[in-house]
Image (cartoon, rainbow, N blue to C red):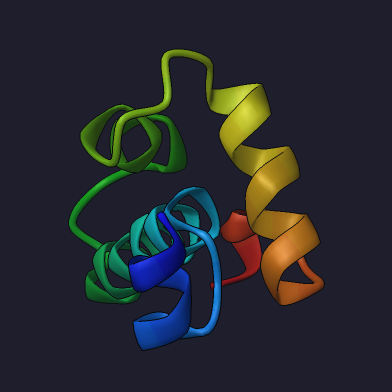
Length: 65
């Protein structure tokens, strides 16, 4: 864990969360899937949790993408 944090500047959990959000953002920009489908695709079991995490990360809900 320490080596990962030294290499990437953040914990594994934060790194993975950020990567999931970036992938979700790309999928939403493609406009092929609805928000709930993207949420499931990036590993969220509940679209509401995904929406909350997305808004916390980017400052606006995924539906605005």
